[in-house]
Image 1 (cartoon, rainbow over the protein chains, first blue to last red):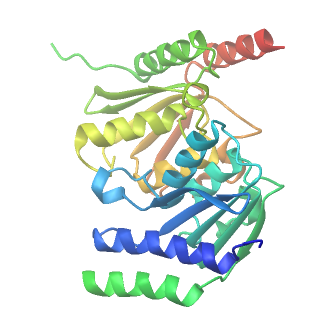
Image 2: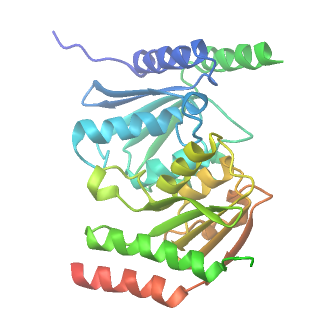
Image 3: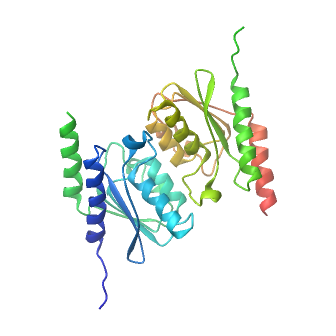
Amino acid sequence: MLSVHSDEYFMQQALKEAQLAFDKGEVPVGAVVVSQNQIIARGHNQTEQFKDITAHAEMVALTAASHFLDSKYLTDCTLYVTLEPCVMCAGALAWAQLDRLVYGAADDKRGFMRFGKRLLHPKTRVEFGFLEVPCRELLTTFFKSKR
Amino acid sequence: MLSVHSDEYFMQQALKEAQLAFDKGEVPVGAVVVSQNQIIARGHNQTEQFKDITAHAEMVALTAASHFLDSKYLTDCTLYVTLEPCVMCAGALAWAQLDRLVYGAADDKRGFMRFGKRLLHPKTRVEFGFLEVPCRELLTTFFKSKR
């Protein structure tokens, strides 16, 4: 029997990563990288833990995926991330020549889409809005708890 | 006697880092981070060594500077880099709230300035063209040797 996971399943896994960030007091964003229907890398935001603004969920997952594949390029991979990537992460995904980007909640203030899809590699397909409500609610709960 | 180093001196140090990258067969880009007239971090491109597109000179130097300062923010720092930063690195410098960016050679194809200074933090001052000729020549020599 073929077991093919859905976008919703993989976004649930990204959301689990976001919850790990939440539990550590980090802005709750999580990501997974999928190749051939398998999760090959996971990451969550660790900028406070490492005191390093480059430790975004996408960057952590992208670096882990490159190590797993022993390749700088993620040309057959999909990245699932709970929040719209920022400019830094979009620039990284462009270098990696990512095949497909799927994100949950939009980030009108910090997200790369302010500049449009041209920040990504021309071949990268983009979809968004998967599990948008729980992805955003986790962020809202986090920021409310910080006030 | 006050010993105050010039922009040219610090760019020479960034160029030394670029030479280290060149010697390893990496695209020769180098960077240093300066705080209060002292170099607090250095970095050169290591994307081939680590098979990781996030290991740009700027990212390596920025992460090292954050560790040195034990802070995510580089609000009193200048980054000297031999080549105009890409979108990823500009996005990282924006998060770090860098005070001042000084770069050598322009990068019309991959540089962040295609999108303008708005990719950086509004407070970041930008200057360029320091030691532009040797910075570019090292890159030209590298790419010629790869043909």
